[in-house]
Every structure is written in structure tokens, then in C-alpha cells.
Image 1 (cartoon, helix red, strand yellow):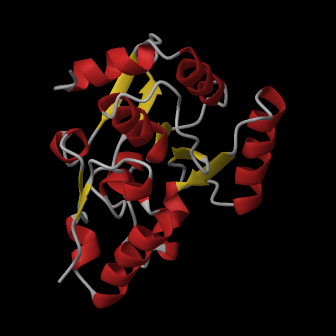
Image 2 (cartoon, rainbow, N blue to C red):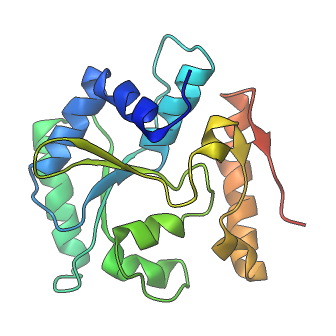
Length: 189
């Protein structure tokens, strides 16, 4: 059973497709990069639900942090490079040095800071290869919620009515409970 960062890393290491995706992302040589969010969460929930087949995600989020080049067109070039390597993957590449604007939050200081401000704690996850090709997992809010099927907002998404509304809209749009029946969804009061 999954109980720790080490368990999650081993789980991902044993998944050839996930490793292929992570290795493709690493070839971009981006600063402070991670493959994150649903890519990691879905694997954990699929495993804990005993699914034999991978749940398809809407996109594979690759993030990085580069304050020197915040041109959105560059992100599209990076996506195109990944598509040329793995055309069947729905890539999404975003520089977190500009994404705080979209979420109406103060500027992020790094990709991990950005991950910590994702809407749900169970989605605030990232995985990457370090310089020695070892997998590294980040989980700024820990693994407890994702491992216990808890969907709840990160603290940032409870600070204002606007952010709480984004969280609530995502719950409806994503409809995770229709895929993973064990999850418990926490509403913001």
C-alpha cells in the first residue's frame, strides 16, 4: 500500500509510460521544472482503487519557473517539441513566473511555490528527474489527503470568495467522484 513519498516514487518508477513522459519533459532542460497535478494524482488514485487501466487525464502539465522569459509563445514552442516526441500525449507547458496573474495571486517564487497554490491539496503534487536521473516528488501539503481520497482546497483557495468559487467550479467540472468512487469531496462553506 502507498504510505510515503518513497512508495509513490516507486509506483511511478514502475510505470513505463509515466517514466517515458517524465523523461521527455526532462529533455527540455527547463529551470525548476515538474510534471504535476492530475498526472501524479490520477496514478495514485487509480492504484488505490485497484484499477488495471490508467485513467486518461485531460492534459499532462509540465511547469517550470523562468522569470527571464515569460513569453507565452515560448511555452507553445515547448509544447510542440513535446508533441513531436510523443504526439498522443495532451501536453500543457506553463511558466509559473507568469501564472499567478491568471489565478489572481501574488507572484510565485518557484514552481514548488506555485504547486502549493494549486486549488486542491490532492492535486498539489509534482514529479521530476534530478541531475542524476533520480525521481523527486514534491507534495507541499503532504500526501495524506491524496492517499486518503480527500479533496479539499489549499489554504489559498479559501482566502477570497473568488478563489473559493474557482475551487467549487473545479469540483463540478472535474467530477472526480464519477471516476474514483472512494474520494471525499470537501466543499467550502
